[in-house]
Length: 296
Figure 1 (cartoon, one colour):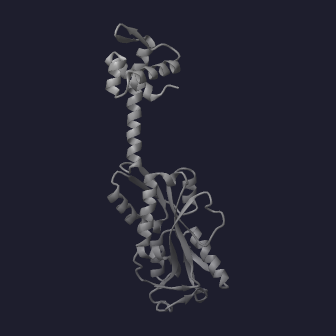
Figure 2 (cartoon, helix red, strand yellow):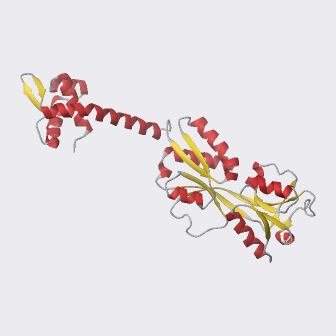
Figure 3 (cartoon, rainbow, N blue to C red):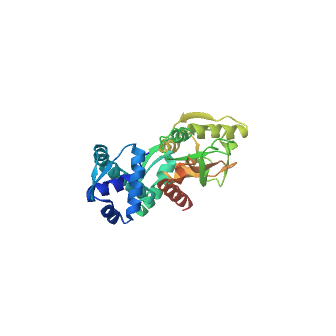
C-alpha cells in the first residue's frame, strides 16, 4: 500500500535532488526522509532512487510514480478541503422531504435560519406524505423526512432517528352558516349526518376510525390531498372536515369557520433521518433548525 505521506517525500526528493534538501523543505530530519523512502520502495517492490555523487536520481519507476504523485496529492488535497468545508458547515447538501402543511409552516422558517447561519449549506425540498416520505428516506433518496403519525405505531420507525417536533391537533371546519359554526366545541357525533370532505389517505383513515368509535361511518363525498381545496369545498357549503392546525395556519379559510372537536384528534409531527446521517453536520444543523421552528 503506497501512502500519501511517502509520495510527498518522494516528490520533495525529486524536486530538491537530495535527502537533506528534502528534509529542510518538509521540516523533518534527513534520517526520517531516508526511512520513508525505504518504506516507499518496499511498498512499490522496486528501487525508486539511485544516489549519484551528492544527488539522487530517479529510476524509471521513480519517474512514473512522481508523475502520478502530483495528480494524486492534488486530488487528495481537494478532497480534504471539501470534507473540511462540509464538516465545518461551509458547504454541504441536505435533501429534505416534507408533507405539504409542514412545507408551508415549519420548513420556511427553519431553512431561512439555516441559510443565515450556514450560507454554504444547500437544502433541496420535495413533498411527499408518509409513508412515501419515509420510504424515500430508507431508499437513500433524501436525508431528512418531515413526517407525522396518529398515535404510537409500534416498531414503525425503530430503525430511524426520530426527532419529535410538536403535537398537531386536528380541528373541525364547517361552512360559515352552519348550525355549529359558533360552537365552543363540537362532538364528532354531532357531525354524523354531514357530508364529509377528507384529506390525505393517512388522515382519511384516522377520520374514519374516530368516527366509527363515535358510532357512525362518515359519508365522504369529496377526498383531496390539497388542503386549500378542502377549505374551498367547505367554504362553498359542500360539507365539513377536520384538518390539522398546521394546514389551517397556512391557508386562510374563506367562507369557513374552525371549531374545536371532541374527542381530541392529535398527530405527532417528527423529523426522521438515518443513524449515520444524523452525524453529518449539515443534517444535524437542519434538524436543529426544524426543532427551533416548531417551538416558535
